Length: 127
Image (cartoon, rainbow, N blue to C red):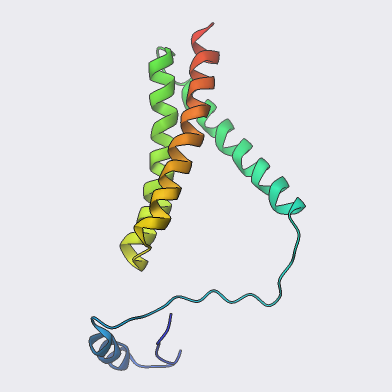
């Protein structure tokens, strides 16, 4: 975060700077040691992360009493909203992430989990 206090600053110095910065511009910078132009590993990791998430959702769905299309769809969509609220809205809450970023993430969560919910709703309700 810029500007910031030194890592060894006292609580009083941090609080004083916080009061001085109130209402003034600030930034968050993410630093990386080196840039890797590799798309293959992120795609593979992303696929497996999504797979684990869907398996966890299926695990919860298996515990539903009645697995109707609506029950399954709303359960899956609830997971999408939990993901959005816990990750992205918390970033807005603590780091003032802009609505331009949040809007895209909300659409991604609703669309992705919504499509997953449609498919799983059909899959589970056909039995």
